[in-house]
Length: 591
Ligand code: AMP
Image (cartoon, rainbow, N blue to C red; front, side, top):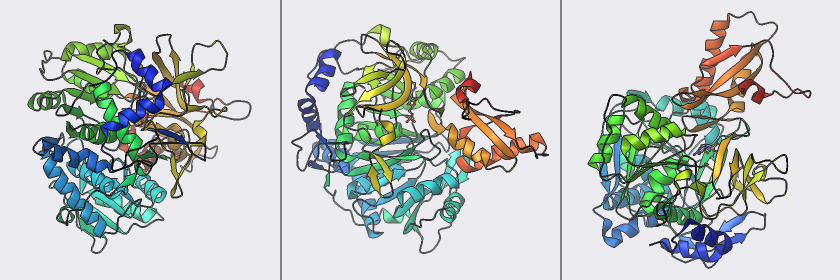
Protein backbone atom coordinates (compact mmCIF):
# COMPACT_ATOMS: atom_id res chain seq x y z
CA UNK A 1 0.00 0.00 0.00
CA UNK A 2 1.23 3.47 -0.83
CA UNK A 3 0.70 6.18 1.78
CA UNK A 4 -0.40 8.99 -0.62
CA UNK A 5 -3.80 9.62 -2.12
CA UNK A 6 -2.85 12.43 -4.52
CA UNK A 7 0.04 13.24 -6.86
CA UNK A 8 0.67 16.55 -5.06
CA UNK A 9 1.00 14.83 -1.67
CA UNK A 10 3.44 12.27 -3.06
CA UNK A 11 5.59 14.73 -5.02
CA UNK A 12 5.69 17.25 -2.15
CA UNK A 13 6.69 14.59 0.38
CA UNK A 14 9.64 13.64 -1.83
CA UNK A 15 10.72 17.26 -2.37
CA UNK A 16 10.13 18.64 1.13
CA UNK A 17 11.13 15.67 3.30
CA UNK A 18 13.50 13.69 1.10
CA UNK A 19 15.24 11.87 3.96
CA UNK A 20 12.01 10.53 5.46
CA UNK A 21 10.55 9.80 2.01
CA UNK A 22 13.50 7.74 0.76
CA UNK A 23 14.30 5.97 4.04
CA UNK A 24 10.67 4.83 4.05
CA UNK A 25 10.99 3.71 0.39
CA UNK A 26 14.21 1.85 1.31
CA UNK A 27 12.12 -0.50 3.45
CA UNK A 28 10.97 -2.22 0.26
CA UNK A 29 14.47 -3.72 0.09
CA UNK A 30 15.97 -6.36 2.37
CA UNK A 31 19.22 -4.96 3.76
CA UNK A 32 21.92 -6.78 5.59
CA UNK A 33 22.56 -3.47 7.24
CA UNK A 34 19.79 -0.91 6.81
CA UNK A 35 20.85 2.62 5.83
CA UNK A 36 20.39 5.40 8.36
CA UNK A 37 21.01 8.26 5.91
CA UNK A 38 19.22 8.65 2.58
CA UNK A 39 21.22 11.25 0.65
CA UNK A 40 24.76 12.31 1.41
CA UNK A 41 26.85 15.00 -0.25
CA UNK A 42 30.16 13.47 -1.34
CA UNK A 43 33.53 15.20 -1.01
CA UNK A 44 33.75 15.49 -4.83
CA UNK A 45 30.46 17.42 -4.89
CA UNK A 46 28.36 14.51 -6.13
CA UNK A 47 25.81 12.54 -4.06
CA UNK A 48 25.57 9.05 -2.55
CA UNK A 49 22.28 7.38 -1.75
CA UNK A 50 21.91 5.13 1.30
CA UNK A 51 25.66 5.24 1.97
CA UNK A 52 26.70 2.61 4.50
CA UNK A 53 23.67 0.43 3.81
CA UNK A 54 24.64 -3.17 2.94
CA UNK A 55 22.64 -5.39 0.56
CA UNK A 56 22.87 -7.74 -2.37
CA UNK A 57 20.76 -6.96 -5.43
CA UNK A 58 20.56 -10.57 -6.62
CA UNK A 59 19.35 -11.68 -3.17
CA UNK A 60 16.65 -9.02 -3.32
CA UNK A 61 15.69 -9.96 -6.87
CA UNK A 62 15.59 -13.74 -6.35
CA UNK A 63 16.39 -15.42 -3.02
CA UNK A 64 14.08 -13.46 -0.79
CA UNK A 65 11.10 -14.30 -3.01
CA UNK A 66 11.99 -18.00 -2.85
CA UNK A 67 12.20 -17.69 0.96
CA UNK A 68 8.78 -16.02 0.95
CA UNK A 69 7.16 -18.86 -0.99
CA UNK A 70 7.40 -17.66 -4.61
CA UNK A 71 9.78 -20.45 -5.69
CA UNK A 72 7.27 -22.03 -8.09
CA UNK A 73 6.22 -18.70 -9.66
CA UNK A 74 7.70 -17.88 -13.08
CA UNK A 75 10.43 -15.29 -12.78
CA UNK A 76 11.02 -15.08 -16.55
CA UNK A 77 8.94 -16.06 -19.54
CA UNK A 78 11.13 -15.77 -22.61
CA UNK A 79 10.00 -15.86 -26.22
CA UNK A 80 12.25 -15.54 -29.25
CA UNK A 81 10.52 -13.73 -32.09
CA UNK A 82 13.34 -15.01 -34.32
CA UNK A 83 13.58 -18.73 -33.53
CA UNK A 84 10.12 -19.06 -31.89
CA UNK A 85 11.70 -20.85 -28.90
CA UNK A 86 10.13 -20.27 -25.47
CA UNK A 87 11.39 -20.80 -21.95
CA UNK A 88 9.75 -20.39 -18.55
CA UNK A 89 12.06 -20.15 -15.53
CA UNK A 90 10.68 -20.18 -11.99
CA UNK A 91 12.21 -18.19 -9.16
CA UNK A 92 13.59 -21.44 -7.64
CA UNK A 93 15.17 -22.49 -10.96
CA UNK A 94 16.55 -19.01 -11.44
CA UNK A 95 18.09 -19.03 -7.95
CA UNK A 96 19.82 -22.31 -8.71
CA UNK A 97 21.06 -21.28 -12.18
CA UNK A 98 22.28 -17.84 -11.03
CA UNK A 99 24.04 -19.19 -7.92
CA UNK A 100 25.80 -21.90 -9.95
CA UNK A 101 26.75 -19.62 -12.83
CA UNK A 102 28.12 -17.17 -10.26
CA UNK A 103 30.19 -20.10 -8.95
CA UNK A 104 31.48 -20.64 -12.49
CA UNK A 105 32.41 -16.97 -12.86
CA UNK A 106 34.16 -17.05 -9.50
CA UNK A 107 36.19 -20.05 -10.68
CA UNK A 108 37.29 -17.87 -13.64
CA UNK A 109 38.57 -15.31 -11.15
CA UNK A 110 35.64 -12.86 -11.08
CA UNK A 111 35.23 -11.10 -7.74
CA UNK A 112 33.77 -7.94 -6.22
CA UNK A 113 34.25 -4.85 -8.39
CA UNK A 114 35.50 -6.79 -11.45
CA UNK A 115 33.79 -5.94 -14.72
CA UNK A 116 32.14 -8.64 -16.82
CA UNK A 117 31.11 -7.68 -20.35
CA UNK A 118 27.97 -9.40 -21.64
CA UNK A 119 27.38 -8.99 -25.39
CA UNK A 120 24.23 -11.05 -25.80
CA UNK A 121 20.71 -10.64 -27.16
CA UNK A 122 17.72 -10.79 -24.81
CA UNK A 123 17.94 -14.36 -23.48
CA UNK A 124 17.30 -15.92 -20.09
CA UNK A 125 21.05 -16.63 -20.09
CA UNK A 126 21.74 -12.89 -20.41
CA UNK A 127 19.67 -12.21 -17.29
CA UNK A 128 21.40 -15.10 -15.50
CA UNK A 129 24.79 -13.61 -16.35
CA UNK A 130 23.71 -10.16 -15.12
CA UNK A 131 22.27 -11.51 -11.87
CA UNK A 132 25.30 -13.75 -11.30
CA UNK A 133 27.52 -10.66 -11.49
CA UNK A 134 25.23 -8.90 -9.01
CA UNK A 135 25.48 -11.94 -6.73
CA UNK A 136 29.29 -11.70 -6.71
CA UNK A 137 29.37 -7.92 -6.33
CA UNK A 138 30.92 -7.80 -9.83
CA UNK A 139 29.90 -5.07 -12.29
CA UNK A 140 28.10 -6.13 -15.45
CA UNK A 141 28.48 -4.25 -18.70
CA UNK A 142 25.79 -5.36 -21.14
CA UNK A 143 26.52 -4.44 -24.75
CA UNK A 144 23.86 -4.56 -27.48
CA UNK A 145 24.51 -7.76 -29.47
CA UNK A 146 23.92 -5.93 -32.77
CA UNK A 147 27.06 -3.78 -32.42
CA UNK A 148 29.87 -4.26 -34.90
CA UNK A 149 33.35 -5.36 -33.73
CA UNK A 150 34.77 -1.82 -33.51
CA UNK A 151 32.00 -0.68 -31.12
CA UNK A 152 32.45 -3.81 -29.02
CA UNK A 153 36.21 -3.20 -28.91
CA UNK A 154 35.71 0.39 -27.66
CA UNK A 155 33.61 -0.89 -24.78
CA UNK A 156 36.11 -3.66 -23.98
CA UNK A 157 38.90 -1.09 -23.76
CA UNK A 158 36.74 1.27 -21.70
CA UNK A 159 35.88 -1.18 -18.92
CA UNK A 160 38.71 -3.78 -19.07
CA UNK A 161 36.46 -6.79 -18.31
CA UNK A 162 37.91 -9.86 -16.62
CA UNK A 163 35.48 -12.06 -18.57
CA UNK A 164 33.39 -11.57 -21.74
CA UNK A 165 30.16 -13.54 -22.19
CA UNK A 166 28.47 -13.96 -25.57
CA UNK A 167 25.82 -16.17 -27.17
CA UNK A 168 27.01 -18.06 -30.25
CA UNK A 169 24.60 -16.01 -32.36
CA UNK A 170 22.00 -13.30 -32.36
CA UNK A 171 19.36 -12.80 -35.04
CA UNK A 172 18.62 -10.11 -37.59
CA UNK A 173 14.96 -10.81 -38.34
CA UNK A 174 14.93 -14.60 -38.76
CA UNK A 175 18.56 -14.82 -39.94
CA UNK A 176 21.15 -16.05 -37.43
CA UNK A 177 24.19 -13.79 -37.13
CA UNK A 178 27.23 -15.70 -35.82
CA UNK A 179 28.77 -13.79 -32.93
CA UNK A 180 32.17 -15.48 -32.78
CA UNK A 181 33.68 -13.58 -35.76
CA UNK A 182 32.59 -10.27 -34.16
CA UNK A 183 34.13 -11.28 -30.82
CA UNK A 184 37.38 -12.39 -32.48
CA UNK A 185 37.62 -9.17 -34.51
CA UNK A 186 36.83 -7.06 -31.46
CA UNK A 187 39.55 -8.79 -29.45
CA UNK A 188 42.00 -8.19 -32.28
CA UNK A 189 41.14 -4.46 -32.31
CA UNK A 190 40.99 -3.95 -28.53
CA UNK A 191 44.19 -3.16 -26.66
CA UNK A 192 42.86 -4.88 -23.54
CA UNK A 193 42.68 -8.70 -23.45
CA UNK A 194 40.21 -10.41 -21.05
CA UNK A 195 41.16 -13.43 -18.99
CA UNK A 196 38.42 -15.65 -20.42
CA UNK A 197 35.39 -15.76 -22.71
CA UNK A 198 32.16 -17.65 -22.03
CA UNK A 199 29.99 -18.82 -24.91
CA UNK A 200 26.31 -19.79 -24.64
CA UNK A 201 25.82 -22.17 -27.56
CA UNK A 202 22.58 -21.74 -29.51
CA UNK A 203 21.10 -24.45 -31.67
CA UNK A 204 20.77 -22.13 -34.67
CA UNK A 205 24.51 -21.50 -34.83
CA UNK A 206 26.89 -23.38 -32.53
CA UNK A 207 30.40 -21.93 -32.49
CA UNK A 208 33.76 -23.71 -32.23
CA UNK A 209 35.33 -22.81 -28.89
CA UNK A 210 38.91 -21.63 -28.73
CA UNK A 211 40.85 -23.87 -26.29
CA UNK A 212 42.04 -22.16 -23.08
CA UNK A 213 40.30 -18.84 -23.91
CA UNK A 214 36.70 -20.05 -24.24
CA UNK A 215 34.39 -21.76 -21.73
CA UNK A 216 30.95 -23.25 -22.23
CA UNK A 217 28.14 -21.30 -20.51
CA UNK A 218 26.12 -24.39 -19.61
CA UNK A 219 29.12 -26.23 -18.17
CA UNK A 220 29.81 -23.24 -15.92
CA UNK A 221 26.17 -23.48 -14.82
CA UNK A 222 27.06 -26.84 -13.25
CA UNK A 223 29.51 -25.20 -10.81
CA UNK A 224 28.95 -25.21 -7.05
CA UNK A 225 26.46 -22.50 -6.07
CA UNK A 226 27.67 -19.38 -4.28
CA UNK A 227 25.84 -17.23 -1.74
CA UNK A 228 25.11 -13.53 -2.39
CA UNK A 229 28.09 -11.31 -1.53
CA UNK A 230 27.17 -8.29 0.65
CA UNK A 231 28.02 -4.94 -0.98
CA UNK A 232 27.63 -1.32 0.03
CA UNK A 233 24.71 0.61 -1.40
CA UNK A 234 27.18 2.87 -3.20
CA UNK A 235 29.08 -0.01 -4.82
CA UNK A 236 28.46 -0.19 -8.58
CA UNK A 237 25.99 -2.75 -9.93
CA UNK A 238 26.50 -2.07 -13.61
CA UNK A 239 27.92 0.16 -16.32
CA UNK A 240 25.83 0.87 -19.41
CA UNK A 241 27.21 2.82 -22.36
CA UNK A 242 25.22 5.47 -24.12
CA UNK A 243 25.84 8.10 -26.76
CA UNK A 244 26.16 11.74 -25.89
CA UNK A 245 27.21 14.90 -27.64
CA UNK A 246 30.69 13.60 -28.36
CA UNK A 247 31.65 10.66 -30.53
CA UNK A 248 32.80 8.58 -27.55
CA UNK A 249 30.20 6.45 -25.73
CA UNK A 250 29.95 7.14 -22.01
CA UNK A 251 29.71 4.38 -19.42
CA UNK A 252 26.90 5.31 -17.06
CA UNK A 253 27.58 3.84 -13.60
CA UNK A 254 24.63 2.62 -11.54
CA UNK A 255 24.92 1.80 -7.84
CA UNK A 256 23.29 -1.12 -6.02
CA UNK A 257 21.31 0.61 -3.25
CA UNK A 258 19.63 3.60 -4.90
CA UNK A 259 18.83 1.53 -7.98
CA UNK A 260 17.04 -1.17 -5.97
CA UNK A 261 15.04 1.33 -3.91
CA UNK A 262 13.95 3.51 -6.87
CA UNK A 263 12.88 0.57 -9.01
CA UNK A 264 11.07 -1.18 -6.15
CA UNK A 265 9.07 2.01 -5.51
CA UNK A 266 8.36 2.65 -9.18
CA UNK A 267 6.55 -0.67 -9.68
CA UNK A 268 3.55 0.08 -7.45
CA UNK A 269 3.67 3.87 -7.84
CA UNK A 270 4.04 4.34 -11.60
CA UNK A 271 3.06 0.98 -13.08
CA UNK A 272 0.44 -0.02 -10.48
CA UNK A 273 2.03 -3.48 -10.10
CA UNK A 274 2.17 -5.73 -7.06
CA UNK A 275 4.02 -9.01 -6.35
CA UNK A 276 2.76 -11.85 -8.57
CA UNK A 277 1.73 -9.53 -11.45
CA UNK A 278 3.05 -10.15 -14.96
CA UNK A 279 5.10 -7.35 -16.53
CA UNK A 280 6.08 -7.47 -20.21
CA UNK A 281 8.97 -5.33 -21.52
CA UNK A 282 9.79 -5.49 -25.23
CA UNK A 283 13.10 -3.64 -24.82
CA UNK A 284 16.37 -5.38 -25.64
CA UNK A 285 18.56 -6.01 -22.58
CA UNK A 286 21.24 -3.90 -24.25
CA UNK A 287 19.25 -0.73 -23.44
CA UNK A 288 18.40 0.81 -20.11
CA UNK A 289 14.71 -0.16 -20.17
CA UNK A 290 15.73 -3.81 -20.63
CA UNK A 291 17.99 -3.55 -17.57
CA UNK A 292 15.46 -1.73 -15.39
CA UNK A 293 12.12 -3.22 -16.44
CA UNK A 294 13.12 -6.45 -18.21
CA UNK A 295 15.25 -7.67 -15.30
CA UNK A 296 15.52 -5.66 -12.11
CA UNK A 297 12.23 -3.90 -11.31
CA UNK A 298 9.93 -6.91 -11.95
CA UNK A 299 12.23 -9.25 -10.03
CA UNK A 300 12.85 -6.87 -7.13
CA UNK A 301 9.07 -6.67 -6.82
CA UNK A 302 8.33 -10.43 -7.02
CA UNK A 303 6.61 -10.09 -10.41
CA UNK A 304 6.93 -12.30 -13.50
CA UNK A 305 8.89 -10.69 -16.32
CA UNK A 306 8.01 -11.50 -19.93
CA UNK A 307 11.02 -10.84 -22.16
CA UNK A 308 11.47 -11.19 -25.90
CA UNK A 309 14.28 -11.53 -28.40
CA UNK A 310 13.78 -9.42 -31.52
CA UNK A 311 10.98 -7.22 -32.75
CA UNK A 312 7.54 -8.41 -31.61
CA UNK A 313 4.83 -8.92 -34.22
CA UNK A 314 1.22 -7.97 -33.48
CA UNK A 315 0.26 -11.65 -33.25
CA UNK A 316 3.17 -12.52 -30.91
CA UNK A 317 2.22 -9.57 -28.72
CA UNK A 318 -1.37 -10.80 -28.47
CA UNK A 319 -0.28 -14.38 -27.86
CA UNK A 320 2.12 -13.44 -25.05
CA UNK A 321 -0.33 -11.05 -23.37
CA UNK A 322 -3.11 -13.60 -23.60
CA UNK A 323 -1.23 -16.79 -22.66
CA UNK A 324 0.61 -15.27 -19.73
CA UNK A 325 -2.01 -12.85 -18.41
CA UNK A 326 0.23 -9.81 -18.84
CA UNK A 327 -0.90 -6.88 -16.68
CA UNK A 328 1.53 -4.15 -17.81
CA UNK A 329 3.12 -3.80 -21.19
CA UNK A 330 6.16 -1.53 -21.57
CA UNK A 331 7.20 -0.90 -25.17
CA UNK A 332 8.37 1.81 -27.56
CA UNK A 333 6.52 4.08 -29.98
CA UNK A 334 8.41 2.32 -32.81
CA UNK A 335 7.07 -1.05 -31.69
CA UNK A 336 3.53 0.39 -31.48
CA UNK A 337 3.91 1.72 -35.04
CA UNK A 338 4.92 -1.78 -36.21
CA UNK A 339 1.85 -3.28 -34.55
CA UNK A 340 -0.38 -0.56 -36.02
CA UNK A 341 0.94 -1.36 -39.48
CA UNK A 342 0.48 -5.11 -39.07
CA UNK A 343 -2.95 -4.97 -37.50
CA UNK A 344 -4.53 -2.64 -40.06
CA UNK A 345 -6.98 -5.32 -41.18
CA UNK A 346 -7.47 -6.90 -37.77
CA UNK A 347 -10.22 -6.09 -35.30
CA UNK A 348 -9.21 -4.58 -31.95
CA UNK A 349 -8.15 -7.01 -29.25
CA UNK A 350 -9.52 -7.71 -25.83
CA UNK A 351 -6.86 -8.90 -23.42
CA UNK A 352 -8.70 -9.22 -20.11
CA UNK A 353 -5.62 -9.24 -17.83
CA UNK A 354 -3.93 -6.27 -19.52
CA UNK A 355 -4.42 -3.14 -17.43
CA UNK A 356 -2.23 -0.53 -19.15
CA UNK A 357 0.52 0.13 -21.68
CA UNK A 358 3.56 2.38 -21.30
CA UNK A 359 5.91 3.66 -23.97
CA UNK A 360 9.18 5.56 -23.65
CA UNK A 361 12.41 6.38 -25.42
CA UNK A 362 11.19 8.69 -28.19
CA UNK A 363 8.41 11.07 -29.09
CA UNK A 364 5.02 9.35 -29.37
CA UNK A 365 2.59 11.30 -31.53
CA UNK A 366 -0.90 11.68 -29.94
CA UNK A 367 -2.49 9.91 -32.93
CA UNK A 368 -0.35 6.85 -32.19
CA UNK A 369 -1.35 6.83 -28.51
CA UNK A 370 -4.99 7.26 -29.47
CA UNK A 371 -4.80 4.44 -32.01
CA UNK A 372 -3.26 2.16 -29.34
CA UNK A 373 -5.99 3.09 -26.84
CA UNK A 374 -8.72 2.14 -29.25
CA UNK A 375 -6.91 -1.01 -30.40
CA UNK A 376 -6.15 -2.37 -26.91
CA UNK A 377 -9.11 -0.67 -25.16
CA UNK A 378 -6.74 0.25 -22.35
CA UNK A 379 -4.87 3.26 -20.96
CA UNK A 380 -1.74 3.94 -23.03
CA UNK A 381 0.78 6.54 -21.84
CA UNK A 382 4.21 7.89 -22.69
CA UNK A 383 6.86 8.67 -20.07
CA UNK A 384 10.24 10.38 -20.24
CA UNK A 385 13.49 8.52 -19.68
CA UNK A 386 17.21 8.65 -20.03
CA UNK A 387 19.87 5.96 -19.70
CA UNK A 388 21.42 8.25 -17.12
CA UNK A 389 18.34 8.34 -14.90
CA UNK A 390 17.59 4.60 -15.04
CA UNK A 391 13.89 5.18 -14.41
CA UNK A 392 11.37 7.70 -15.63
CA UNK A 393 11.93 11.41 -15.01
CA UNK A 394 8.28 12.17 -15.67
CA UNK A 395 5.47 9.65 -15.66
CA UNK A 396 1.81 8.89 -14.99
CA UNK A 397 1.06 7.36 -11.60
CA UNK A 398 -1.29 4.40 -11.74
CA UNK A 399 -0.62 3.40 -8.12
CA UNK A 400 -2.29 6.52 -6.71
CA UNK A 401 -6.04 6.45 -6.05
CA UNK A 402 -6.38 9.88 -7.71
CA UNK A 403 -7.07 9.49 -11.46
CA UNK A 404 -4.45 10.90 -13.84
CA UNK A 405 -5.78 14.15 -15.34
CA UNK A 406 -7.10 13.44 -18.88
CA UNK A 407 -5.37 16.53 -20.26
CA UNK A 408 -1.97 14.99 -19.46
CA UNK A 409 -2.54 11.63 -21.09
CA UNK A 410 -1.05 12.51 -24.49
CA UNK A 411 2.17 13.90 -23.02
CA UNK A 412 5.05 12.65 -20.87
CA UNK A 413 3.40 13.43 -17.53
CA UNK A 414 4.62 14.93 -14.28
CA UNK A 415 7.91 14.46 -12.37
CA UNK A 416 8.54 11.15 -10.63
CA UNK A 417 9.40 11.55 -6.91
CA UNK A 418 12.62 13.43 -6.30
CA UNK A 419 12.91 14.86 -9.82
CA UNK A 420 12.61 18.63 -9.78
CA UNK A 421 12.66 20.02 -13.34
CA UNK A 422 13.31 23.68 -14.24
CA UNK A 423 13.91 25.51 -17.50
CA UNK A 424 17.23 26.86 -18.65
CA UNK A 425 16.22 29.48 -21.20
CA UNK A 426 18.20 32.06 -23.10
CA UNK A 427 15.64 34.80 -22.36
CA UNK A 428 14.19 35.34 -18.85
CA UNK A 429 10.55 35.10 -19.97
CA UNK A 430 10.97 32.25 -22.46
CA UNK A 431 8.34 29.57 -22.01
CA UNK A 432 10.58 26.98 -23.66
CA UNK A 433 14.13 25.96 -22.92
CA UNK A 434 16.34 23.10 -21.94
CA UNK A 435 14.79 21.07 -19.13
CA UNK A 436 17.28 20.77 -16.28
CA UNK A 437 16.88 18.79 -13.06
CA UNK A 438 17.76 20.21 -9.66
CA UNK A 439 20.52 18.31 -7.83
CA UNK A 440 20.58 15.93 -6.11
CA UNK A 441 18.85 13.61 -8.54
CA UNK A 442 16.74 10.96 -6.80
CA UNK A 443 18.14 7.48 -6.11
CA UNK A 444 18.66 5.15 -9.07
CA UNK A 445 20.17 7.83 -11.31
CA UNK A 446 23.75 7.82 -12.56
CA UNK A 447 26.46 7.69 -9.95
CA UNK A 448 28.96 9.04 -12.45
CA UNK A 449 30.76 8.13 -15.66
CA UNK A 450 33.23 5.26 -15.94
CA UNK A 451 36.70 6.52 -16.80
CA UNK A 452 40.08 4.83 -16.48
CA UNK A 453 38.84 2.31 -13.95
CA UNK A 454 37.06 4.77 -11.67
CA UNK A 455 33.74 6.56 -11.43
CA UNK A 456 34.16 10.22 -12.41
CA UNK A 457 31.78 13.05 -11.60
CA UNK A 458 30.07 13.85 -14.92
CA UNK A 459 30.97 17.58 -15.10
CA UNK A 460 29.60 18.29 -18.58
CA UNK A 461 26.17 17.27 -17.34
CA UNK A 462 25.94 20.27 -14.99
CA UNK A 463 24.82 23.80 -15.78
CA UNK A 464 27.15 26.73 -15.01
CA UNK A 465 25.76 27.21 -11.48
CA UNK A 466 26.41 23.56 -10.60
CA UNK A 467 22.88 23.31 -9.20
CA UNK A 468 21.29 21.46 -12.08
CA UNK A 469 21.75 18.31 -14.13
CA UNK A 470 21.40 19.00 -17.87
CA UNK A 471 19.09 16.68 -19.82
CA UNK A 472 19.82 18.25 -23.26
CA UNK A 473 16.09 17.90 -23.91
CA UNK A 474 14.11 21.01 -24.83
CA UNK A 475 10.67 21.47 -23.37
CA UNK A 476 8.13 23.48 -21.40
CA UNK A 477 6.81 23.18 -17.85
CA UNK A 478 3.21 24.15 -17.11
CA UNK A 479 1.60 25.28 -13.87
CA UNK A 480 0.25 21.79 -13.16
CA UNK A 481 3.95 20.63 -13.07
CA UNK A 482 3.53 18.75 -16.37
CA UNK A 483 6.56 18.67 -18.67
CA UNK A 484 6.13 18.92 -22.44
CA UNK A 485 8.90 17.69 -24.67
CA UNK A 486 10.06 19.56 -27.78
CA UNK A 487 13.23 17.72 -28.86
CA UNK A 488 16.97 17.48 -28.21
CA UNK A 489 19.26 20.48 -27.89
CA UNK A 490 22.34 18.48 -28.94
CA UNK A 491 23.17 16.18 -31.86
CA UNK A 492 21.82 12.95 -30.43
CA UNK A 493 19.63 10.99 -32.87
CA UNK A 494 17.05 8.42 -31.70
CA UNK A 495 16.75 5.50 -34.10
CA UNK A 496 13.86 3.26 -33.00
CA UNK A 497 14.45 4.56 -29.48
CA UNK A 498 18.20 3.89 -29.60
CA UNK A 499 20.54 6.75 -29.02
CA UNK A 500 23.37 7.46 -31.44
CA UNK A 501 25.47 10.59 -31.65
CA UNK A 502 25.53 12.34 -35.02
CA UNK A 503 29.15 13.25 -34.27
CA UNK A 504 30.04 9.57 -33.95
CA UNK A 505 28.65 8.85 -37.44
CA UNK A 506 30.42 11.94 -38.81
CA UNK A 507 33.77 10.71 -37.48
CA UNK A 508 33.35 7.44 -39.39
CA UNK A 509 32.32 9.21 -42.60
CA UNK A 510 35.27 11.59 -42.31
CA UNK A 511 37.65 8.64 -42.24
CA UNK A 512 36.79 8.00 -45.94
CA UNK A 513 39.76 9.38 -47.91
CA UNK A 514 37.57 11.26 -50.43
CA UNK A 515 35.46 13.09 -47.80
CA UNK A 516 36.38 16.69 -47.02
CA UNK A 517 33.55 17.55 -44.59
CA UNK A 518 30.22 16.18 -43.46
CA UNK A 519 27.27 16.76 -41.20
CA UNK A 520 24.86 14.17 -39.88
CA UNK A 521 21.39 15.22 -38.79
CA UNK A 522 18.20 13.50 -37.67
CA UNK A 523 15.32 13.20 -40.12
CA UNK A 524 11.94 11.79 -39.27
CA UNK A 525 11.12 8.21 -40.14
CA UNK A 526 7.53 6.98 -40.30
CA UNK A 527 8.32 3.75 -38.47
CA UNK A 528 11.45 4.31 -36.40
CA UNK A 529 10.83 7.87 -35.25
CA UNK A 530 14.13 9.20 -36.55
CA UNK A 531 17.02 8.09 -38.74
CA UNK A 532 20.32 9.77 -39.64
CA UNK A 533 20.87 11.66 -42.90
CA UNK A 534 24.38 12.59 -43.99
CA UNK A 535 25.45 15.63 -46.02
CA UNK A 536 28.90 15.07 -47.48
CA UNK A 537 31.37 17.38 -49.18
CA UNK A 538 33.89 15.46 -51.29
CA UNK A 539 37.54 16.56 -51.49
CA UNK A 540 38.49 18.82 -54.41
CA UNK A 541 40.68 16.03 -55.82
CA UNK A 542 37.91 13.44 -55.62
CA UNK A 543 37.25 11.73 -58.94
CA UNK A 544 35.30 8.77 -57.53
CA UNK A 545 31.98 7.66 -58.92
CA UNK A 546 29.45 9.17 -56.48
CA UNK A 547 27.19 6.14 -56.23
CA UNK A 548 30.19 3.87 -55.51
CA UNK A 549 31.40 6.35 -52.91
CA UNK A 550 27.91 6.50 -51.35
CA UNK A 551 27.81 2.74 -50.86
CA UNK A 552 31.39 2.71 -49.56
CA UNK A 553 30.54 5.30 -46.93
CA UNK A 554 27.29 3.60 -45.90
CA UNK A 555 29.15 0.27 -45.73
CA UNK A 556 31.82 1.91 -43.57
CA UNK A 557 29.18 3.19 -41.11
CA UNK A 558 27.42 -0.21 -40.98
CA UNK A 559 30.74 -1.93 -40.46
CA UNK A 560 31.76 0.35 -37.61
CA UNK A 561 28.47 0.73 -35.74
CA UNK A 562 26.09 -1.95 -36.99
CA UNK A 563 23.29 -2.00 -39.57
CA UNK A 564 20.65 -1.00 -37.01
CA UNK A 565 21.73 2.63 -37.41
CA UNK A 566 19.84 2.67 -40.75
CA UNK A 567 21.88 5.23 -42.73
CA UNK A 568 20.51 5.35 -46.26
CA UNK A 569 20.13 9.08 -46.95
CA UNK A 570 23.50 10.39 -48.05
CA UNK A 571 23.62 13.57 -50.09
CA UNK A 572 26.68 15.06 -51.75
CA UNK A 573 26.72 18.85 -51.42
CA UNK A 574 29.14 21.56 -52.50
CA UNK A 575 29.40 23.06 -49.01
CA UNK A 576 27.84 22.99 -45.54
CA UNK A 577 26.37 25.97 -43.70
CA UNK A 578 28.80 27.17 -41.04
CA UNK A 579 29.01 29.90 -38.40
CA UNK A 580 31.58 32.66 -38.84
CA UNK A 581 33.95 30.66 -36.65
CA UNK A 582 33.57 27.64 -38.96
CA UNK A 583 31.24 25.50 -36.83
CA UNK A 584 28.76 23.45 -38.85
CA UNK A 585 25.19 24.64 -38.37
CA UNK A 586 23.45 21.27 -38.16
CA UNK A 587 20.18 22.83 -37.00
CA UNK A 588 20.06 24.79 -40.25
CA UNK A 589 20.37 21.58 -42.26
CA UNK A 590 17.67 19.73 -40.36
CA UNK A 591 15.13 22.51 -40.91
P1 AMP B 1 18.09 6.98 -23.81
O1 AMP B 1 19.17 7.38 -22.89
O2 AMP B 1 18.54 6.10 -24.91
O3 AMP B 1 16.91 6.43 -23.07
O4 AMP B 1 17.61 8.31 -24.53
C1 AMP B 1 17.17 9.40 -23.78
C2 AMP B 1 16.59 10.43 -24.68
O5 AMP B 1 15.49 9.88 -25.41
C3 AMP B 1 15.99 11.59 -23.93
O6 AMP B 1 16.98 12.52 -23.55
C4 AMP B 1 14.99 12.12 -24.94
O7 AMP B 1 15.64 12.90 -25.92
C5 AMP B 1 14.47 10.85 -25.59
N1 AMP B 1 13.27 10.37 -24.91
C6 AMP B 1 13.19 9.45 -23.94
N2 AMP B 1 11.93 9.25 -23.56
C7 AMP B 1 11.16 10.08 -24.32
C8 AMP B 1 9.77 10.35 -24.41
N3 AMP B 1 8.91 9.68 -23.65
N4 AMP B 1 9.34 11.28 -25.29
C9 AMP B 1 10.23 11.93 -26.09
N5 AMP B 1 11.56 11.72 -26.05
C10 AMP B 1 12.02 10.81 -25.18
